[in-house]
Image 1 (cartoon, rainbow, N blue to C red):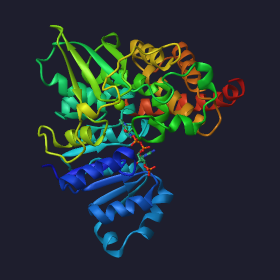
Image 2: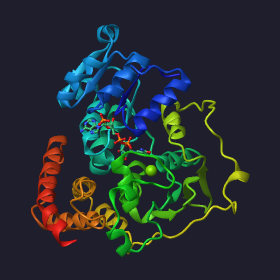
Image 3: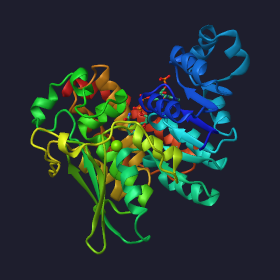
Image 4: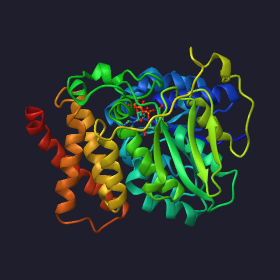
Length: 395
Ligand code: NDP
Ligand code: MG
C-alpha cells in the first residue's frame, strides 16, 4: 500500500474524508497543505505526524505553531505562503491527492505533474480551465491522473473494462441539487443557507452552491471532455436524485456499463489512493432492498431553461481555448458574491453569461502558459467583481 503521499487541501471536506480513508487503511501521509484552518491542521499533525505542511495564508501560518506541541514543532516543518506551497508540491511522493478548491489548485497541480507525481485529482476547476496544459504534460511525464470526483471515477472504472476507443457516449449523473423541482422565480429568492443544504452530499461551500445552480454539472461536463477526450455532444447529463448510479458509459456496440455504490466520497478517494488495487473496506455497503420507500432508481432529463449553467458550460466546451477559464473565473466570483449576499442566486449564471459575452467578443487570450492563464484569471475576476455591484442592484 502507498505510504508516501501528500494531501493538499487536508482541512476541507475532501481533505478530511481522505484522512479518514488514510486512518482506516493505516496510511500516514507525509505532506499536508491547507489555507487558513490551522487549529484543525494542528490536530491532523498530532495524529498523522507528517514531515512537512504548507499553509498558504501567511498570517494563519504564523499562528500554527501556537497550536502545536513542542514535539510536533520539532518533527513537522512549516512552509508558508503560495510560493512554498509549490515547493511542497515538488517534494518526492508517490501520489498527491489534490483537494484544494477552485482555481488555486492549478499551480500546485502543474508543479506536482512537472515533478512526475501521480495525481489523485479531486479538484475539478484546474482541469476544466487548463486541461490542455495539464494533460499533455502528464502524458509527457508519464504521470497518472486518478479521478476522485465520483462521476469521473465511475466513468474511469467503466472505461477500464473495455478497449480504448470503444466509448460512444458518457452519461453523467446529477442529483439535481436542492432546487431540482423549483421554478426560476423561486430560485431568485433563495438564501445561501438554503443553497448550501445539499440533499445527498455534504461538501465544501463552493461546490455546494455549484451543485444547487448545476454549474457543478457544467464543470463536470468540461472535466469529462478533458479527462476522457470526448466531445461535449457525447456527454449526456442524467438527473438521478438517489445518487446511487455514479455515472455510466455507453460503448459502440450499445452496451452500457455503470458504477453503483453508496454516495460516500471515501469510496472514490480510497480507489484513487489504492489503484490498481481494490482494498477491503468497512464503509457502509449498498443494500438494494433498503434503497428507498419505492425501491426505485429514477432518471430525468435536465431542464436547461431553469438551469442555464449547463448550456453555458456546453458553450464554453464548444468554444474551447480560454472560454472554460472565463466561465470558471466568473463563477468563482459569482459564488463568493452570492454567499456574501451581494447577488441573487440566479445572478450567478447571469454573471457567468455576461463575462463570457464580454471576453469572447474582445481581444482573445494568446498566452496559454501557466502564467498566462493565471494573469487572465485575475483579469476576468477583476471585471466580474466590478460587475457584481451593478448586477446586484438589477437582479
Ligand atoms: P473545501 O472548501 O471544503 O476545502 C478546500 C480546501 O482547500 C481546504 O483545505 C482549504 O483550506 C484549501 N484552500 C482553499 N483556498 C485555498 C487557496 N487559495 N490556496 C490553497 N489552499 C486553499 O472544498 P471541498 O473539499 O468540498 O472540495 C475540494 C475540491 O474537490 C473542489 O475542487 C471540489 O469541486 C472537488 N470535489 C469535492 C467534492 C466534495 O464532496 N466535497 C466531490 C467532488 C469533487 P482551509 O480549510 O484552511 O481554508
Ligand atoms: Mg461530482
